[in-house]
Length: 419
Image 1 (cartoon, one colour):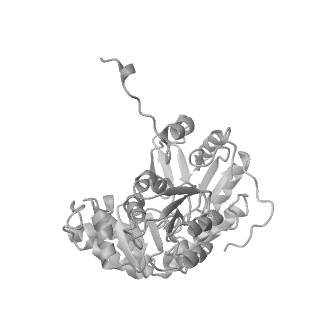
Image 2 (tube, rainbow, N blue to C red):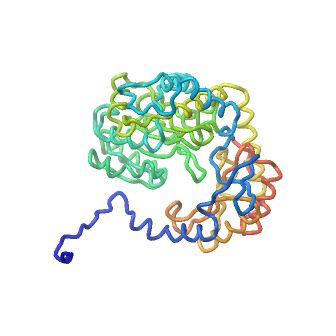
Image 3 (cartoon, one colour):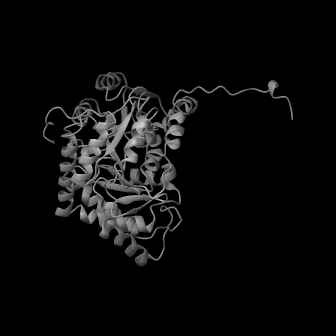
């Protein structure tokens, strides 16, 4: 073997990502979680209860299927029916060359549901990896390369694209929802694009209406990932951003996974006011959006069935049931998210004890995921509770009793009315 001491060693710039730091700090938490049986769990699901091979039973309070549509008989049958109808699981060729009608049928249904132009993708992360570089180059926009401002808390599916976008334009990162910073950038740059979560995995919403004011004043483009609010929020489940933003043109782009409250698989890109030529640019040059991995036929059929449920009173009934469960939890446990419609609650527990607390909750028959750096900032660990329509009053009340036992703060006053 040759002497390595004479060879050059690469020094990373770490301008937009730092794996060594993230892994060095965060991996010990994951290892500790796994040693305590809180990661890598394998369990069968029957009647809403998970069963491990060792015989332990628990209720999952860390699942994003907020309306429990993923187990809806019509959604399951929709996937099966589409497979029978088209006779293929995955017609593996880019849709720009050849496609069966299934995807077009789903996009037409979603166009009507959202009152917009839609493009489907295999995943929201795939959509972001395809769209964000096109925004950076000005090809998705007005032709001007923008300053791209990423929210500090932007989901990793968006933040991971920073280095790619940096090859096309200038990148900046701002503090969470820092409207003053964004406006200052708008004053200095001819074009600015802000990248953020419309609804985030720690229980918050973006300041959509305030951002709309900046869009009107400066032409700001805003790219939202609103995955956590799709279906769970708004008339016909259109999500938080589509329910609140008055800007319905090329200045607003929304990406949402179909894997959460929508109850199926894949993702949808929601657009307004784009030309047919721009849509073709997205399909042809949107990186993995143009590859031979579209949504498979079963996912499309299930999504068509879920979209139909979104047009019925059943969706409203499930949304109301979810809100009732959220309000019940808030009446028993105090969190920073109390009183909001968002189905996620972060129960504060110290970094030193969060794994032990999670283990005790799991042993009592409930799974809530411990979150720690780099999922959250250091020193802000907690147990993330995700409430669903299908949780019973008894399950929620017993979970809250256990959470109190491990140090969660009880609700001292009646929570604000759910908005």
